[in-house]
Image: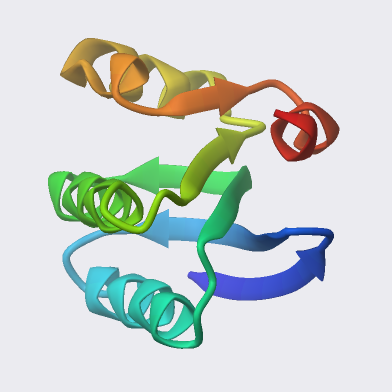
Length: 109
């Protein structure tokens, strides 16, 4: 898994590439915690390079969503690959997260 981020307006865009599974979900969770600890309130997860996610990875997404609520932040997902979108649909996560087809639409919302 490779994580990079960039600041665009009021959002930090976290680009996720590769797999999030039991071997590396803690690295993903640490990066998210680092962003929140740095005062970031609005985050877009760009999932265009995410090709696999396990239940451990889904749990980290849920933790991130729960962190945004008390601080009135925003957590948006964009560019989910069809297989990843299907996992979010089946697990019910599509109703929990705001999911956008493009990064631009995620940033405008």
